[in-house]
Image (cartoon, rainbow, N blue to C red; front, side):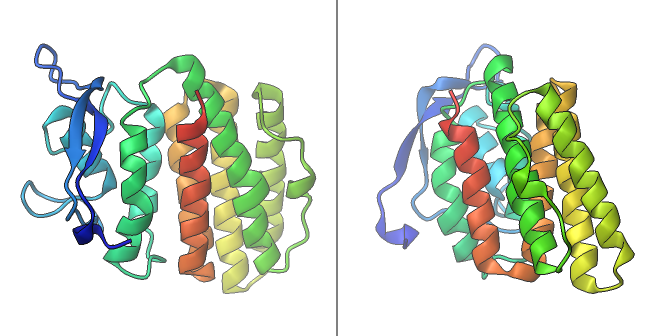
Length: 236
């Protein structure tokens, strides 16, 4: 995808002049030449994914989740700042289209909790499992019951913590990365089990992706980013 050759993308969202918190029902436009770069930025010096989303929805440049949108936007910073992206264009090509869809995901506690369970499930049964496989660590994360409620989230958190401990015993770099990814996944599942810790779930799941992709490379961070963000925008 070459952004410069595409027209600006209209999306829903925009600033509520009464609250300055943004709404999910006004038209805003993503600039066709937008490029997402690493880290936080001062106004006028570039944007990461969440900064651009906040700017478009509220009119204010901040690295924060707009109050009107799903708390799962907390997944954006770890994904945006992964060192596994090939370059800024790769990061932009993958993440930018999701901003249009995230801007149409209003904050809703019940829906966000379902999103949290899905993110925790991906973090444990896909991302941590991949990292453990790459390190040659035996585990049974893929055989776990999918995370869909508090009970299955608690079970997934416990299994991921056990797998992280097994990986920590090994003295190789890949095993260290696998242990870190499994710990992040356990944190995501544990937060999901607590209910209402949606932002923590999203952030931890994205950190698991960032850690696991550190050794696996660009294809992995692209795959994990799409899995996590699809889970957010497809849940209603």
